[in-house]
Image: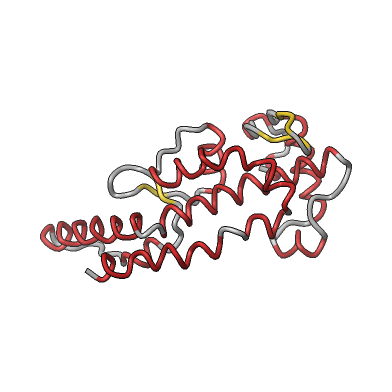
Length: 193
């Protein structure tokens, strides 16, 4: 019942995160991927990862899990919110599954799951965009300090950019290029994947 009453406030709170991808990669990257917003939102709302580039980001990051209804969810707090009951008898398991289904419905329709998923997909797309467009200009995508904060050494950012330049599908768009599939299975530098 609490989720039915307060579920909308979760989604409203998650709206604050929407600007983070632009803050981390810049407005240029956001504008280049903006034509894909509708596709990102559709995947975030339905959980269906039909688009190959979104599916590739999911496979590389491992951040999506399935909804109870069989679709996908990128909400990192989901397991914490739901709580995990393991090794329980079947009555408790069925009751827990029913409660999780109701709670997940509240989180989805309260917009927390779709907004969180959309933000994650958008962050992945703008991150790829920033790396490739900077590399094509011969520039480092992120400052040395920011790269270190993300857990990447400057050398690794260059190596990732080189693999992207060699193997990714690039599409010319206004303000640079947009990256499609990374084709990471073709990358010779496996540490860069």
